[in-house]
Length: 174
Image (tube, rainbow, N blue to C red):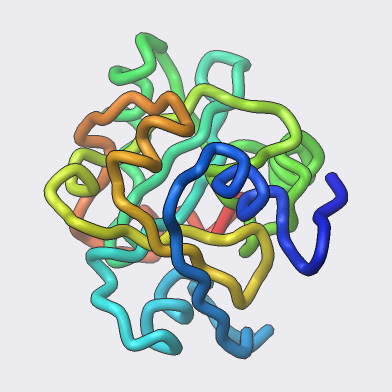
């Protein structure tokens, strides 16, 4: 998807929808092990407010999962929320092809093909959340209600507060 005047499909989607948002840029370090935690640290944000966008496969269908960067995605909870039986992380190449974004820059907004979206219920408790703006080094701050509305998301407890390496699912997504 081509973006106009330095925008990304994510910023264009928000602008078209009339949603108020803020842009936050930082210098991405290609050696960073966690894109989301890197963004939180670089921008001086509470990691509980910064959310990562992950692409999962539920019974053969791709979905978007948006969870806090300080935690991990609970695949069983995601499958339950989606009414599916089995969830696993999507193939990274497929995630990039379907969303139109590169890993580490996948945004829940402005994807090439709109996918069913599930946002962790902790987002609804916040006044502002930050998600990838569609490229590494760009985050967007917005009201979680707007994020939920524009993505037509289901809000469910799909995140875990732990960040163990086995459960954090660094790819595909951010």
